[in-house]
Length: 301
Image (cartoon, rainbow, N blue to C red):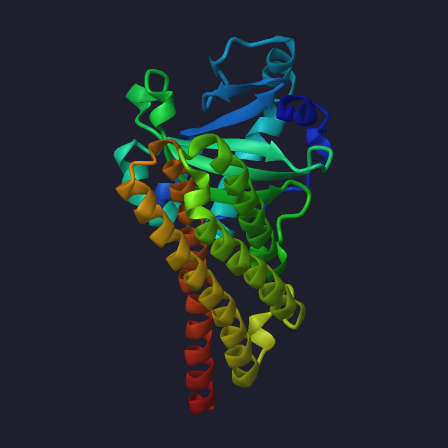
C-alpha cells in the first residue's frame, strides 16, 4: 500500500490527454473540493484540493510527490471526476450528502498491481468543518475504478465491480471471527451470501462474454438493443437477490446490536445498491431510451 511511490513513478507527459467533458454544477464542485487519500508506507496521507498535507505529517516521499508531481495529481483528480461522470452514479445517488458538505469528496486510492496505472477508489464525504476533528465519522458513498492509461471501460466496468463484491464478501467472513460475539450463529447467512456471490460472478461473466464490450449503440438495430438490455437486466436481478439477503443480515445484526461488525455489512450493501442504481440509470435506463428512440426513428422513415 504505497500509492505515493507509484504516483511518483508516473511521467505526466506519458499520460494520454483527457477529453474535455461538460461537467454539471455538482461535478464541478466535487472537482474543486476533491481530497486525495494515498497510501504512504504503513499510513494514509490525506491531501487537500491544493495538495496541502492534512493527515499525517508529510514525509520525504509525500513532499516530493506534492512538489514534483503536481501535474500528475491534477490529471488524477480530473480523471477521477470524469470517470464518475461517465461510468458511475455515485455522485447522483449521494448528491444530498455531498451538497450538505459543500461538495467535499474524499477519494481513497488503492493501486491494483499495475505500476501506478489502475486504481480501486473508495469515495467518502464529510463536513469541511469536521473533516479532521471527526475524520472517523465520514460517510462512505461508494466504490469505483480508474485506469489512467485507458479511459474507456469494457462492459461499463461491471466485471471490476463484481470482482470487488466477491473480494469484499471474503473479507466479511474474515472479519466476522474478530468482530462478532458469536460468529457461528450467523453461518447460514454467510453461506447464503457466498453462494449468491458465486452465482452472480459465474452467471454475469458468462453473460458479459456474449455481449459486445464497447458497442456503438447508434449502429445497432432495435432487436439487438432489446437483447442486450435483457441480458444486462438479468445481471441486475442477481444483484437484487444478493442485496435482499445482505439487507436481511444487516437488519438482524442491528437488532442484536452487533455494532462492531454491522458497519462492514452496511458498507457492502452500499456497494450493492450503488451497482443496482448503475444498472437502473446508466445501463438499462439508457438502453431503454435508445430502444424507444430506435422505434420512433423507424416510424418516421
